[in-house]
Image 1 (cartoon, helix red, strand yellow):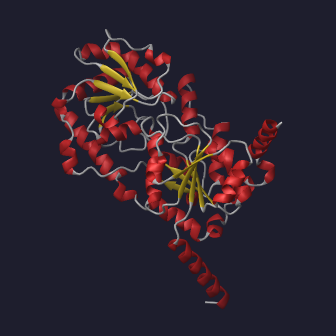
Image 2 (cartoon, one colour):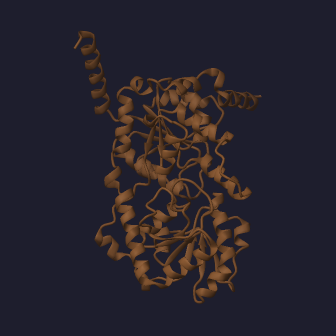
Image 3 (cartoon, one colour):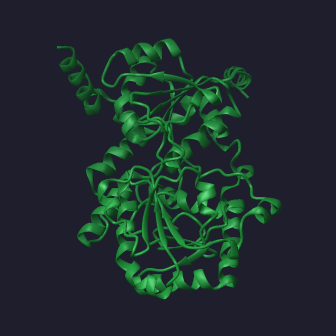
Amino acid sequence: MQIYELICELASFKKYSVICSMKPRILIIGLVWPEPTSSAAGWRMLQLIDQLLQWTDAIHFASAATKSTASYPLNKLSVTEHEIVLNDSSFNDFVSDLKPDVVVYDRFVTEEQFGWRVKQVFPELITVLDTEDLHFVRRARAVAFKNQTDIDYDTPDCYRELSAMYRCDLSLIISDVEYNLLVNHFNIPEKQLLYLPFIEKELSVEIQKKIPGYSDRQHVMFIGNFIHEPNYQTVLQLKRIWAALKKRLPQTELHIYGAYPPEKVYQLHNVSDRFFIKGKAINVDETMQKYRVLTAPIPFGAGLKGKFVDGFKNGLPNVTTAMGCEGMNAENWGGLIAENDECFIEAVCRLYTDETIWQQSVTNGFEIINEKFADKIWNGVLEKAIMRILKNPLEHRNKLIVQKILWQNSLQATKYMSLWIEQKNNK
């Protein structure tokens, strides 16, 4: 080995040793404050924070949003909270004073708003994007569903989200289906992606035995945050087929849960029809353990469905569509899959009345949690991925030509829009 190469290797090792011995300061910038009792996105953020806390206790969370009563008190996790201002240079001062080692954006819109400011203050800072799900995929599928056309990803939403991913050093992808789409269809470099699904505690045999069984449950339910359009459309599907389904299950009620239900959802409430709008579930685990079947004829969406993960943890099997179980184990699904009204109604009746099928579905759900989402599988994966970049950011960014192109001033439309808004606000 040449002397110069040896010196470089020793320097790199020394730098890596320093990084390994320190507790990196991590700044998470959120479009909103996490609400784990309202949405899967909020619970996902707490899971990521939990993973980071296994590595460092220097975690900061900042948001320009107003907190709600459902916002999680992050200080309980020893996470420092910061209120920031959108389209304001005070954020630059905040980042400069904090001096983070890593910045995490909670979705691509957040990166658009704050990414260029972070880059302006610390050009070499490591940046991570948590995509939650691919927003452009969900929106393209929504348009296709509404217009009854083929899915078309050639949209401004697509290029905005992909641009944010290219600008960041690492993007967290929650679904293996979306990971494969990014790699095989859009040619995103794999070193800029990390497949990281929901991370759940393993369900031991003892835990499984404590969960209520078939005879201890009754009625069917649905749950979903109504800020997300797919959940509202799913409820409309249920309302449409309930007339036929309730005749097959004459003693059964359908209960609809979800945070932020608008008036149009409450208007679907009908006691005589046994169709009940319940609003937000205060305790999802306790609520789910009362019901026998989760019904979710999901017409479109993206990512992983938190409602099914919650259901599997609570011994609640489901009937859904292929879209609903995307990114999970459809071959040994924790329930039944149906693609049209007739098949869906039949599947709900079978799962509700056949204890053998029901119990096998519950067992499958437990296995999905333990084999695909258990924390013993994923603990340390995020830390390892970020450490690899911290060890040698130049090596990681080598040949990321698109990233370099997108950081050219001529292509930073979001930067100049933000500056224009800031100047307008200061007048």
